[in-house]
Length: 419
Image (cartoon, rainbow, N blue to C red; front, side, top):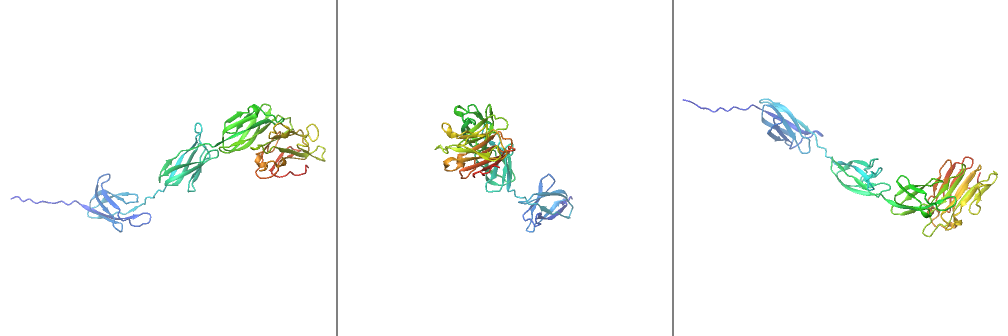
């Protein structure tokens, strides 16, 4: 007789137990998932941690296995271990929390809308509502770090350009590229170029706006005009054959026209000086007359002179200074006057301007008057009337012994002495 009996062989197994905790505060993690499988293979067993962060995996086949642990908001981990028959393996985990990334980065380039879209250096880029800001580099590039995630507004500004705003959405932990275009803000500069010695209009003089590439020549009547001059502080340079070049500052306002009249001095003999006064008349042709005055020492060493419209002076004899151009004596009373010095004497010379009969209600500052010195060997040579009220503008002093120029540039009456 044959007897059949089934025999069941039990697979040798062991147990894996442990605790899963938060690495940041050592607190248990509830609901962490534990998976067991052969390395790079399929998962055979799984479990979840209890309220104390504990887990247990029973009846795990002996051998080398990999335990994987993960939880919401934490960086997953894995560990390889060997299971021994009928034994318990303790395997604890400390999971690192995922740091929530709440900021991102904005980078880009600021360029002009002008021809060929040149980069704009020195543009200020500000994230509205924050203290984050930066400045574009020489190639127009910029970068803003630690920008809060979400919708942001950038405010962008640069002298000589219209201010702009740009919208961008920032994603935490990521970079977003935002290129920005700025439209140049421009105004118009116009005026007349004249011969400082005669007051006559000068045709064919060259006028440039320094650093912009803008250039023109004076037309009939000595007039010139620049359109599309970048707004802000600019410098006009004027020159002509047989004349000494000069530079005049001007402040250009977007969408407006500013008048700048310039006098060019014929080349002077060594040791001589020529002082020019130019201004702008308003719509009512005011001020009609600003008067140039020069006070200084006579060569006799004991007295002072005063050259102005009522005492025009002399170049070949004392005081060796003369009012060359008095605007009232020229047809149309153009807005310029000139004083020339042929020889200096020891002492202090003072040049000042009087608003004749106080014709300009806003004071001298409303005339936008400028003064240039030709032939000076040291010190400042260009002046613009300061803001404020006052009928007298003391512009500068000359040391008659050294020729050095000292700026005063105040709306005050001049000192009375010349020694």
